[in-house]
Image (tube, rainbow, N blue to C red):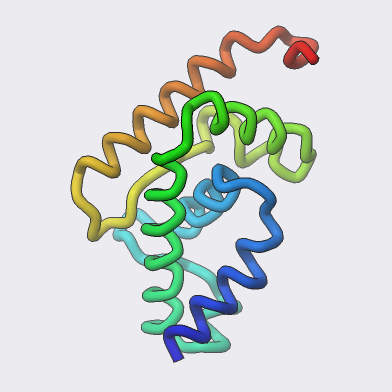
Length: 133
């Protein structure tokens, strides 16, 4: 059942998001301060434990994959994501958060924080009329 929940989450939910950055930002938005994930549809379909495990596994995999990308590529992903009006609120500096799964070590969390801070700094450099072509 857990594998099916993970396949469903990755194949349906995450597949709709074109970049790793968007996928990770979305997963992070599902995480509560206590570290659980809130996804009504997945929980209703597969149950609480399989949904938590599926999203947690996808969170760990996506976070690790993003940390292997050069900052230049992550920045390109951010610029592409910003072109989608549906991302406007999620990518604002006060709501855009990259965090590691709660069970993870501090190194991944620190790395994601560095990526988030780097992107915030780069975003401040974008002129008001948008990035140069």
